[in-house]
Length: 457
Image (cartoon, rainbow, N blue to C red; front, side, top):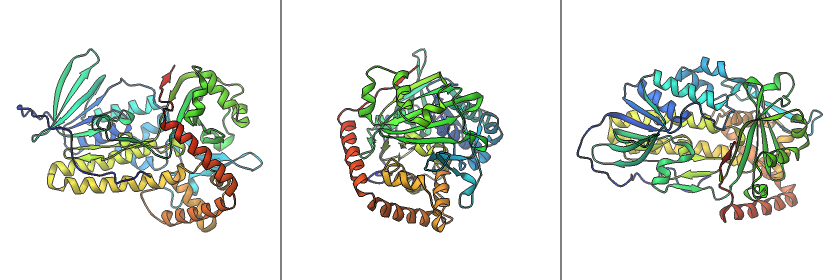
């Protein structure tokens, strides 16, 4: 997926020498989203003194509302499963356009190879993120909102960082270790110039919350729906309280056509897909309209002496398979082990960080192979008419459920799927070549100044 290893050296920021050895905390965590709140809570449980800092105040809006079944074991270990159940809407699977009579095919999580859980949840991220943040505080974390971590520096004694509050005041925080869970802000990624766009995939998204959108019937009512269209793909995510998150991920060149239009352009885009238009015919925009650009990136390296990145601070990929929260929390669990063990035995730090990076890269690659081919004609054909040859369909469902780190027969079946994809692609060579040429044009556009705007209402 990304060229080069995720651990490409263990250098840190320029040393900041502080004569006062006031190590007030064992670990400073920047970012109070799912990754930051998870790693902070788990480290506090290990008896460490943890400072968690979130620049905004909860509740705050965030995209990424669809969870995966592989989140469930993490919720159980974290002790928040009942809280998630209380605020979430059950999601039994995902549906994609197909040639069937009803026009879509449902991939049920219960059909995964050795399923961990038969369902996941759709959540409002303002509620979900606040719940995790408050839970971290309940575990003994010193959790602060409305403060911005900046100017992270390292010396022989530990870590120094400035905290700037909402009123402009600053203080210096000292700790033994620093975890960057700042998400797409990529605090250290920006400070150290580690962040790179993905060379093969750049896209933009516009989305909003709708009321009175049509749900799927029966047991499919909570499922996420995915639609392809000429300029990208569309999601529909049923949320609690009768809301529906609806958005379009599209090429930057297409988004430029909005020319200052906001919600109107989103509605125009959604109405171009007949089934989406039908499901929204009685709906109205409730709010939370956003536009965001330049989706996919990675930071490299992701760790160094006394610091590491976790969650979206490491990388962000196209969210088509709802991987964001799961990868954030999974990486946070792994990060908590690396940090705790490194503080106990600093000599093991480099080895632990290397293993951490290898695992994350392997999981990202398994997702990204599908993600960056999903809009191709061959992949559209295979998802439209799935076959369970050698239980390959069940392995794909396992991947959609987030099962990319365990093996249990999934990996070799995904390899078979890749072979079947290549065979299918050969049979559609003309369409594939046209799609590839279109994609190359869009990539050139995105790297020559495609949209980077972030708007919201």
